Amino acid sequence: MARCRSWRSKRSGHSIGHVPGRCRQCWAPCHRSVTEGQARCDECWDELSMHPDSQVRQALLTDGPPDRVLELLTTDLDPLVRTSAQHRLGKLETTAIPVAERKGLW
Image 1: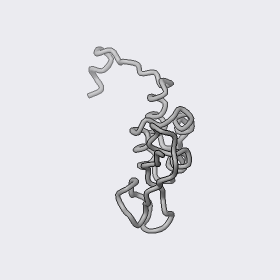
Image 2 (image 1 turned 90 degrees about the vertical axis):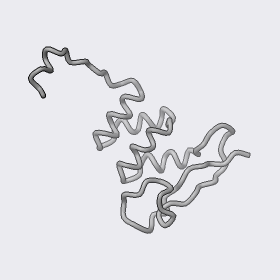
Image 3 (image 1 turned 60 degrees about the vertical axis):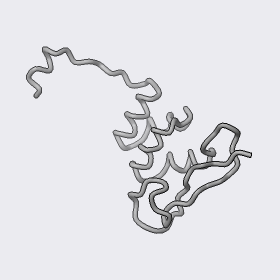
C-alpha cells in the first residue's frame, strides 16, 4: 500500500515562514494511504494549497500539482503564486517585447 510522502502543518510551533519539512516543530510527515503512483494525498494537496505562507504555496507548484489545485492557485492573492499557476496551466500568454521597444528600458 502506497503512503503519502508529504508534510502536514502542525499548526503550532514557530511563525509562518517554514517550508514543509524544514522544521519538525511546525511540520509532521503525513503517511496517509494514497493511490499507487501518487506522492501526496488529496488532503495534503488541499491543505498546502491553502497554507497562509505564500512560500509554501509557491513551493507546491514545483511538485506538479493536479489541475484542480492549479485552478485554485490561479486565484491566489500573491501575484507570484497566481502567475506561476496560470503559466503552468497555460492560461498566461507570454508576449515577447521587440528589441526596438526594449532599448530604452534598461
